[in-house]
Image 1: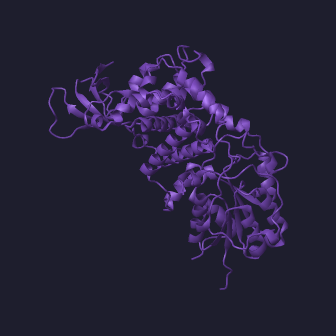
Image 2: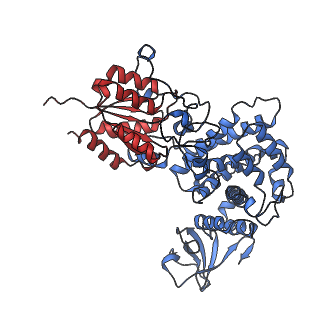
Image 3: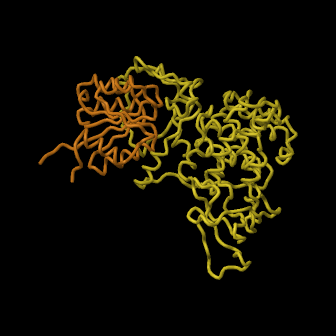
Amino acid sequence: MNEKIKKALIIDDDQLVCRVVEKILTRRGIQVIVAPDGAAANSVIINDGENLTIAIIDLVLPDGVTGWDIIDFARRTPKTAHIPIIVMTGAVLSEEEEEKFRNKACTIVRKKDFNIESFKEVIDRLIGGEKA
Amino acid sequence: MRLSDLINKKGGPATPSAPVPVDKVPEKIHVVQEVQKPQATSPAGPQPASPAKQASAPRPTTHLRPAKLPTPSSSSIYDSLPSAIYQAAEQLEIPIPQNRQLVLNNARISLIEIFNAATDPSLPKDNLWEKVRNIVADLSMLLALDSNLAKLLERDSSTAEELSSHSINTALIAMDLAKEVKKIEFTAQEIGAAALLHDIGIAALNMDIDDEMKGTLSSHVEKAVEILVELKVPESVRVMVAQHHERMDGKGYPKGISGKDFLLSSQILALAETFERMMADSFDDNAKKGTPQQNYVQATLDNFHKALDPEILKIFISIRGFYPNGIMVELTNRSICLVLRQNEGFPLRPVIQVVLDSAGNHPETMRVIDLRSNNSLSIIKAITHSGDQR
């Protein structure tokens, strides 16, 4: 059994959100890279994109590069064009916005409704179950 | 790191930008322990937290460009993490700063500095509004972490700190109340900011905080608004500060507005402000030792007879309880009891402890009665240190 180690990119400038998501993922055997801003996120996509299994992206980041930009960039980059993306946001999204995200194969998780069990289910659905 | 750094969404107005070119990309990948948030320069973030906020924050529709995000001037003033994230963090045993005392002390000191800087012409006024937002963010987090408001309320005795602790207590009470009131004009955080600043006129005029209780001084309200204009505080906050001594019956000041002109958000501030003053005695250690305490809920309600929207008063009673913890009450069987805790949704039927039974004797063993499940008994009146109340 030589299964590739799963690796997640978390893009959020809030430390607490990053720590929460990181802890859930690492407990499931998933390696985590945290990017606190758009520049760091794009760096990971460029330099380590082929190893990413999933990306979890906040929409509003501090350096002017937004979650929307990162999603577009990840989808245009062959190494990450196919990976599941979770949009984790505190914003209220319209139906049209949600549809746009779905068209880019993104799953939406609302921070205000965040729940550990539901989040684990989303992760399992997108990249498979917990490894022993 | 400040608590608010954890819960404030940072960054300026988002603008469309292409991904960063490879040659400009930092080589080092940040890991979470190394994350350093940049200094906030302006509020940002598309996180509508209230109808008012949603109304002022146009959503992107046809194309998802950040240019369509609310700008700092049009968005509401805060973003804070939803409590769901804190709950998840607690479940995962992720340490989050929870030292209430430290946070409250820092908030008090910071607010005194704000008052000083805002009212002293010789001191710089840069970032004062940002500092107010930071305090509100800290208080929001405290409320999100701990629903027991009583643990958070304290009064300091020195004059400067008394005003600052009064303002912080008012903010906590107002934000706690605002969460429950539907269809308010502004967010709980905006109301909290107004509560922090509502008495800045007192600081500027070197008045004694107790002078305001006489209810005849409109100058401090006008002075406060004047200062807030200078500090470029949003209009929503200025309006609430301007109205915090008004009443629905038109008998308030400085303008004597009435009816719907007296915004619900301002009413929340007015109620919280008065309630805090009524409660001030209970913050005093000596008063805490002696029972019965004043029924400050009832005293507040008396103060606002016909002065506030009934819905606000109803919610206030449902949160605070009509007979607050620590007061003595007399029951229909003539026994005298101490109110121990509230039953949510049953403001007239708290949990009580019998102090004197119906025959006038101290019970030999502790007797606790949950009035919610004992329909044969009711409270007929509260007994306070200033005499019986209805």
